[in-house]
Image (cartoon, rainbow over all chains, first blue to last red; front, top):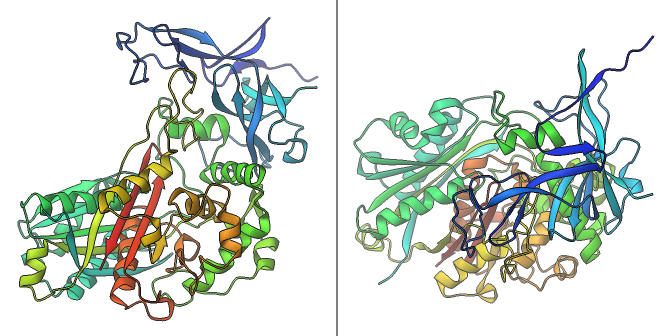
Length: 149
Length: 396
């Protein structure tokens, strides 16, 4: 009988997958409003921001869960470590997705089962959580994009 | 006051996969550049090395590594690392010393011994390093980023895989006549079309390889060049290593995301265009003054982006410019007459130095079978990860 492995995020603090669905965790400058992903906790990087720029202006911020594909590509060959690849290697797609509210582009793998043939520039996609790799103990998950059904 | 420095000597070790150490390639290139200049090593006052991060400590302090290999002479030294723009920063360092009057004769050297296959982050677990994380969390190799740019170009400007293949065919033809190129073989559109897809939409022959190689330059003050009997040297008239302007809205290696354009106006020029524009302004020339250009064709598709970024045509005009034959040897503005990265593969710290070697030979009329007729002015551009890039303008 196959036991269900524990699911752990492959990285802490970059995304959440609670009841509100999968969301990217970034920060936002309380002074000028600039959002950041991944989290920027050092200082707001907008040169024209008049905030204190000591990190105190940066607060946790959850980014939009949907966007439109800016571009996409795939990987047909096994990347080098530290990518943890199953054996045999399984190709995967990556999408660069434009978030309208944040006016930024965020990369993510595309959920398994979708190839570049299923994608198009301008297509609406949403966040999901997928397994990046696994070991004897757990499945390690990451945020992924998938076409909006 | 003139802000020109003279290029008295240029030298290279051929690109390839030679399986030897980077110091050997740099040393061979340095000796060739010194011989070309007619300068003895002990007369060099300043050595600027371009660093490599894949060859241990000697690579980090490349300037001293090459100075020791040539025989300690008391010359002052610097080492620069700036990803693909490392060579340009080393040239910039030597140029600044000369223009400040701190030295008259400088040697610039860059060399690399590259691993097989994909570039990878340097070793060890470093979960705070974006270059480590993009491999770990995304599997985003360099070609994958190049493929994102290529797909974007197809969607926005109507580029086709045939256009990308035509860039490779052109550059391979140029490289045939370059004894320092690694690949010296005609390539047909079918060769590109039938090569394996690495990162859709890019195929193996769309993507530049990783190579071993070395390049060196002897730079001097204009006064020294005259005293040395060279009255009409090739001159470096501008060198730009500008950083991006916030918000940087074009996705760049190794980023997970662009800057947000929500709260600050996007810069008037995207990053690559700003790199070239700063050099044009410094030289007091424009794209119409160019005889040739060496651009950083990490992929075939990226060469088309560069046409627009350096002002050879308007955004969206690159495919038409390519199809017209203007960027081939014999055309109005040959691009990558050296054969480009398509024919060389990338030896990172040597690449920007090799580009200026090519401009030098072209402007001297010494480029043999790849000579651009009546070449007077050239630009060479690079872009590297972490916000690096360079543009160098040479005139004669």
